[in-house]
Amino acid sequence: QTQLQESGPGLVKPSETLSLTCTVSGGTVSSSTYYWAWIRQSPGRGLEWIGTIEDSGSTSLNPSLQSRVSMSVDRPKNQFSLTLRSVTAADTAVYYCARQAGEALGGYWLDPWGQGTPVTVSS
Amino acid sequence: EIVLTQSPGTLSLSPGGRASVSCRASQIVSSRYLAWYQQKPGQAPRLVIFGASWRASGIPDRFSGSGSGTDFTLTISRLEPEDFAVYYCQQYASSPYTFGQGTKLEIK
Image (cartoon, each protein chain N blue to C red):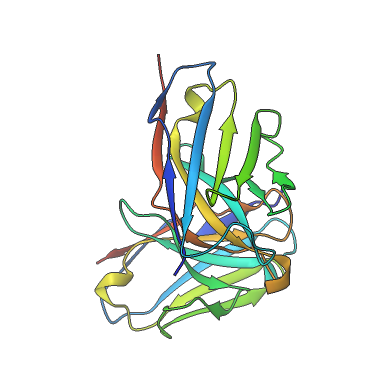
């Protein structure tokens, strides 16, 4: 059973960079069947898909965040990561990582999700 | 961007009752690309339905999904106490993948 766990700082200063890591257990990030996604949730924006990375390193990003987001995969550590630059208070949210089904499975649903990590942007 | 609008915002029902949650898309969504998630307080969302009508692993058969085009429905028959939560629809037909604003199913 695949499980995901987010890690990273809970507090980031405005204009700085947020970096989060998702550790995958019970499965491998080196999969052509599944992709790996980041989603965030805040009271004001609801659930917001941030982006997805494939094993190849190819990414699909939300246009609203594309200019500030990058993602990477670390196969030896079985992890994938999110970097969000120039954060503001509007980036305060609970950040989730999730496994995303790939095209071979017929769709791109998200299952399972990590438990989420709260991030506050404040000085 | 495809906007998903859920209704109602809150649904108050009793255990044993039947719940229907609507999700309307701003443009046609292939039924292959519509999912429903359940979220309980303090927890991450959990996949309930994918491909509009396929139950995820471990989801009881009292949960069902239907619909096509721009109108989709999540139905929960014979409500159990553990079913009271917030439900979200999501489309993954086109980027950016988007979610509905959520429907809170509360105990009456």
